[in-house]
Image (cartoon, rainbow, N blue to C red; front, side, top):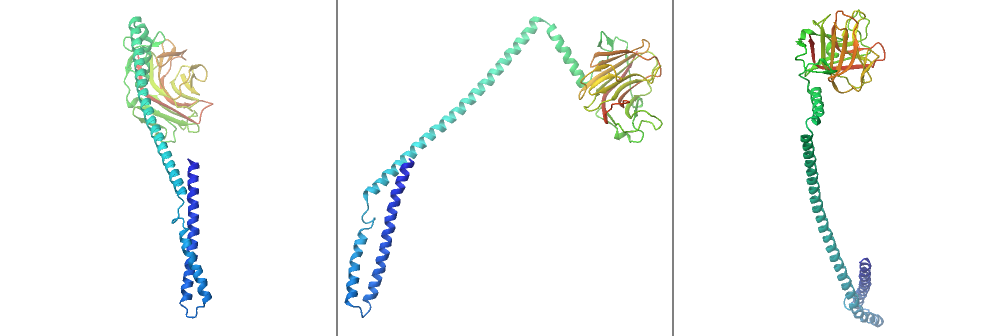
Length: 366
């Protein structure tokens, strides 16, 4: 098609050149005629001038007759007509091809939509079949298949929304309060004493929003009392429920953000020998007994349920996490004892910023 177009354009270009040459000739002859008129209008025109003018005027009709318009080259015009007709046919053919491609693309789109719908239907059908097979297997095999997932599901629900159960020791697990002798001791605001750096307002180290107590402290903060030489702390001290005998239990849901390290998050204060009976510290997301025994790992950025049972008469302390017994140790003898939770810097290897959060704090005894 490109060759045809070029050839047609070349033919038309030649015709235009001939027309331009003819126009220039006409202009020249027009000038000759004006000069002839000027000469004949002069009274002193000589015979020689008249002869020259006459010979030049005789040539003018021949120029007119040689015009491409007066004497067109029919072959050239026929060639142009044929070539233009060929170009038109070629364009029409291409238009039909493009139209066919458009129809084909539309059909492909429709086919892909139908295929996607059929695939989704197949996936749903397979899912239903798998679920049906699972249910049938459960009915045939019996409750043991479901017992473990259900217990696991109940633990997760308890961790997320709080538990209505009271933890007690039985076969290394937490069981329901009823029937095991524990009684919940009601807590009021009077039982919550807040300890924070003595020179800083409480709202700069503590908040209580939507049932969550957030406590934080910095490594360079002052102690809780001007006369104290201990590390900085922001803690909840259970006040008015000190004990020296019997079996007492602390329960609370705790949260430690990533980055807090070298911080005591829960303790039993008081002992016959030493200042504390139990210290639970977080080091790099792991819980340790003081800075020694490893109790649990991976506690960063998640809520966990902590239960501490102190059997003063039996001389032992047991720690539970999320309903599982994770640690047991001999206590340090009876004394003026009470529970605390929050953040309290360790003697060494502490992060600059320390934080823990607590909700659903409860105390039980028997």
